[in-house]
Image (tube, rainbow over the protein chains, first blue to last red):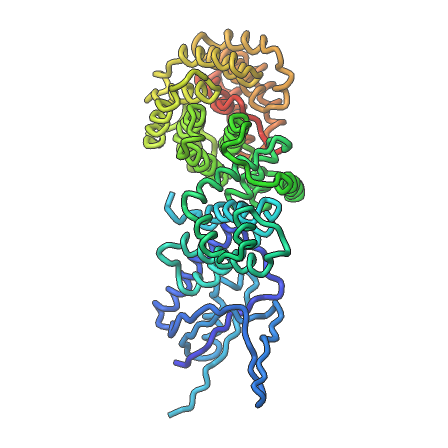
Amino acid sequence: MTQFLFLYRRPSEQPALSPAQMQQTIPKWQAWFQELSANGHLKERGNPLEPEGKLVRGSKNDVTDGPYAEKDLVMGYTIVEAHDFDHACRLAEGCPGLSTQMLVEVRPVLQIAP
Amino acid sequence: MEPFDHLFRHESGRMVAALTRIFGVHNLALAEDVTQDALCRALEVWRIQGMPDNPGAWLLSTAKRRALDVLRRERTARTYAPEVAHAIETNHDLAPALDEMLGAANMRDDELRMMFSCCHPHLAERVRVALILHILCGFSVGEVAAAFLSNEEAIKKRISRGKTVLANSRRLFDLNREDFAERLSSVHRALYLLFNEGYHGASPEYAVRKELCDEAMRLGTLLCDNPLTAVPATYALLALMCLHAARLPARVNAAGDFTMLLDQDRSRWDEELINDGQRLMDLSAQGTVLTAYHVEAAIASVHAEAKFPVETRWATIVELYDALMKIQPSPVVALNRALAIAQRDGPQRGLDEIAQISDSKRLAAYPFYSAALAELHLRAGDLTLARDCFLKALALARSQMERRLLERRLAECGTSGGALNGAMHALEMTSLPLGRSIAH
């Protein structure tokens, strides 16, 4: 099994959800996590991230606010375990956020063979 | 209802109302933004981490933090409600003032004040109802449109007209104002229409209907919980809603078709709601004012008492319709009265009564006027007239569900005058006599 990082990215055009629609998405996510967990794929549920950020660069203590446009912002992450890249992508396809234009970036965690 | 069933919608209404008081009604849009923001944050956190034990409190403290940010950042850019303005001027810490204003008791008041504000006399009744659904019940514009089977553009205009009037009204309605009683009766009427839209309205989908009825009852309960608004008419209104809502589970069968009053499986009526309704009727029996809500609740209660249709006390129902004609005469009430008379004295007497309805032209566009005539002709054995009237009603049907019902009834005209329960089919359809669709 290999670990993969799912990065939840906010789409550039986010559909406005009504309060009822927002609420309806929560049990779908819970069901998705439950399924991942039941099949032994959930390594860490992860966390949501605040929208703001700072960028630290260079040698002169240069700290700026993140160059984040409103779009394509990383909103949270989860760590899963999958057989291979394809398998991880298939798992990501079950993410309920996809139906509201969210993007899931799938990144294999680099591991050095023992 | 499960406690969290409509958490987002209901908390949205509560928070918009409370934040509107804090920011002032002219900043209604800001209150909506802050609320939307709190809901979005909740969604982002909860979808990954699951719901906390007290999601309402979580949402509120998130909204409170956002509100504080706004007030600090825009101290002078806007004007706010007097309490907040005072705290800003005297350079006091805003947090305690906000805590106080967002306390449970204050928030309940704000919800009521928003309800009263939505019923502004400058607004048409259908605008008031749309505004209540949108602001206090958390329905999006699209969801309001879907509930009324209306087009989204029209509803959007209706709601934005309402918000403009609201934003110009300077502050949320104060429950101690002189015109309180007048405004309270507008609020009653709006909740009545909201309930009616759910019960009889155009939208054929059971879930939507039930949701509108539930919302009307939830807001009615808020009125009953405050000593200022818990007057006999409020109890009568809520009683009437409970007694009708009790029949909802039996109104639509497994195939999704209307099942009319006399055909309903009465064991599926909600006994708890019937008991609530009767208890509320007792509470409504004070004072000297008899409202239409009292009489309508009484009619619904007579139906609720009858374990079987044959046990229905039609003579009492006719008397109640007589009373209703005195309080609030209308062609629809007259039609219902005629149908009750037909149940008591036979179809010909019913037809005679319908012929005497003075203002019957106003009923012409109403499918159940023709349907009622058809049912009585059918019972009187005149299949030709019955068929003509059913065809007329069919042409006016507003939904597939109504169409299917009328087609089934029309098919009865082919068989030999079998429809013993006919008149009641129409009676059930029109049993909220004040009602008319607010969608169009």
